[in-house]
Amino acid sequence: MTELPQLTRRGLLAGGAALAGAVVAATSWPAASAATGQSLRLSLPAPTGTLHIGRLSLRLVDRTRIDPLAPSPRARELMVHLWYPARASQGPAARYLPGGVAQIYTDLVSAASGTSLPADLLTFRTHGGQAAPALPGVRCPVVLFSPGFGLNAAIYTGLHEELASRGYIVVGIDHTFDATAVEFPGGRVETQPPESPDLDFLRTVRVGDTRFVLDRLVARGHTLPHGLGQMLGMSRIAAFGHSLGSLTVVTAMEQDNRIDAGAALDGNPLGGATLRQPFLMMGNPGHLRANDPDWAAFYDRLRGPRRHLVIDGTEHADFSDVTVFKAAVDVSALFSVGPIDGLRAVEIQRAYLTAWFDQTLLSRQSALLRGESPAFPEVDFQP
Image (cartoon, rainbow, N blue to C red; front, side, top):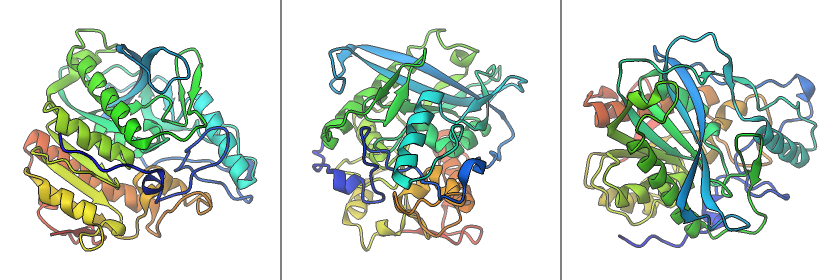
């Protein structure tokens, strides 16, 4: 395996500032202005696909690994979240974040911004039905997801719901003791330790998490509830990530040829891997070929189908749901977001991610990927 460059906190947090406090690295969450008060309500744009969406959270325990990040010896324990095509359901809508995690984020942001945020700010209803029955009689491609450093998979719900509405099963991983907070069944919450982690070591742990989750999906038997086991199309697997999640995906793909295609959202660095699987790079204007030698060199080493896209007006946090929330709250004190309209940023990312996975997993050729499109003038194809 090609050796990866040493990671630093500075490199990964270049797109935004970390929140200080007992819990470290809530690096991509908005601070509300005083004017919002108790009336602030957040929401995400509806997905544009034709399928209903279900959402399910599962606790997985890897008993072959002692958790190197835990404060005391224990097996590595994860929460994974699935967004999937579902039957129409009259059941409750899934909440954006579970209550314990939502409270921690809200308290951190309130402290950082000097604002008292509504207690229910981050538990708003999403477009997925909580544990809705899976759509019967179909096999769906599987897309693994790894979030940015310190973040939870749900903070990218706008992208996950879109993919699920178009026939994919998205499996997002909360990396315990890396994410700011992870909530397990029964309400137990594990938080990120206060000491500064070695980020290259975190990458290694995350890759182990990703491969473990993939192993569990492949060997699922009939253990997944609500008909999900019968839906998993494990012959077509992709993975994507944001920030440190991008490098996690690159390394996992280098080590595991079960992953057929991948995508990186604003990862920095992407490292020294040489991949043969199809790979999409999508980032902010700081990742132009002319000004980012890491991205240029990584692209040159790709041996399969490849695209390097830059979205004008974006910054690091615009590749998460924060790009939508910035219209309602002042995020500038915590991290960098660009001038692009948040709804437009999500629209662009949804279009290109869906086209990429449709083409690489389902052999549906997309004109959108052939070159720059008048429908999306913000997107610059790099040579």
